[in-house]
Image (cartoon, rainbow, N blue to C red; front, side, top):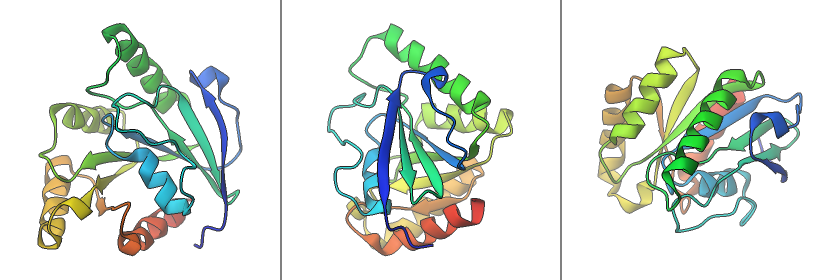
Length: 189
């Protein structure tokens, strides 16, 4: 599948404000600042389509992106550390769970984990919650350009073994990994 265009659709505070778009949807989940927005920009090859930031917790709404009128990326607020109040983090968690369980157009979740670190406690909790709810999911190991090339395969295998989900490496600076990810997206739609 060749991606030729993508556009931002809307930001919404909850599932109730999200339009039904009649396209398969991929829900992007992960810790704050793990690289979900950078992933969107790199996969669709449009710099700045999804807003990126070095400040954890910048994504506070559900952001929907139409990709080639073939599928939707739903960039969801990150879990884990964010420079927001505990109440706001709790509200995000409730909204996130409702979205993931009730949004009928979701064909797969994509969980993002930073390849530079061990799998974090909240990454494991999210993977367990996904498995408990029997939701389809695969993992993107982000920031692989910041580890040695020889580590990429072993990190992905370690994540796969630990979380029992397929893992794909990703770098915003190296499109080498994008084809396998795009093939996976195409397979699921």
